Length: 222
Length: 145
Image 1 (tube, rainbow over the protein chains, first blue to last red):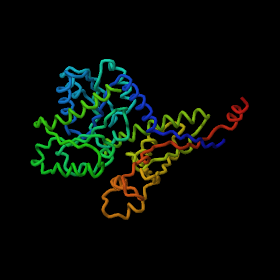
Image 2 (cartoon, chains in turn cyan, green; image 1 turned 45 degrees about the horizontal axis):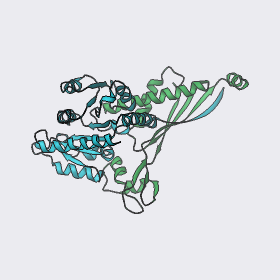
Image 3 (spheres, rainbow over the protein chains, first blue to last red; image 1 turned 135 degrees about the vertical axis):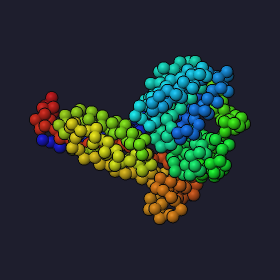
Image 4 (tube, chains in turn blue, orange; image 1 turned 45 degrees about the vertical axis):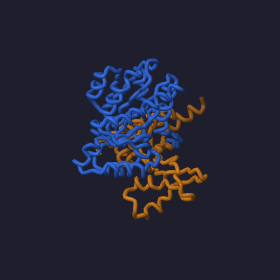
């Protein structure tokens, strides 16, 4: 019997990062702007994506990757809006990873896509460590999760490039101060744009949609 | 914690696959230990990860291996040129911070200039090394080849 020490230095997250980089290059090559929409369960991710699709689908060619642990409820909502939708059932996983997105990209006609919306699995913890190759990392929370939700999950807000506080129209009913939530986000990530949205306030949704449109236009200049 | 369990499980699977492939490539008959390096900002729980790894490794050559985790402090980089790790002792002594994780996020303030220092490390999860046992004659054989 002989004992050996084998040095491996295998970085588990870097393995994911490498595939994410590959995804990003592929998207860049096709001038696709991609958005990773992360957020809490029931925070309104699907609704915000639906609104963006409704407003932008006549101007740009859109595709959607809909991540869900099981079932295809979200994908069927997107399909109703007549955009190509790839459901990704993560099975036992609590987040999308770069490998799953790589596989989904193989099923999308990228030559005919200008905007790719990726809905991550509802979770404020696990998606943080897994880059997908996206151009914009969005985190969505709603007032119904309580105004301490942000400080309880600092890393996702720290690494987000856009933060959305949704359902602000019912903040009073659930006794939550949406402005406090905004301040909490800014205390973790002072430079991140924060948007307060409500399904019933068209102006608030317009800011979210403008944000995406800006990215699409930038991507087309590349 | 349900979601977190699943998260650890998939990472443990990845670690197991990598460890076994490396062990087999070196002609191992048994894996004695697996050493990981984990950044404190990684959303991975070392105890859960160890539990999942042991469950997956059952009936394999890594069945009885020790699963060792070394924790790494987050590292910072600032525009002023400062590079270093987060001062963990200072964070623990501060009473304004409510949780360990939040402490790290708040500690982004550069200890030199007070500006916003960037986190450049601390979310790593690295399989550092494994300790394996091989048959003596098998090693000799491969050396002769």
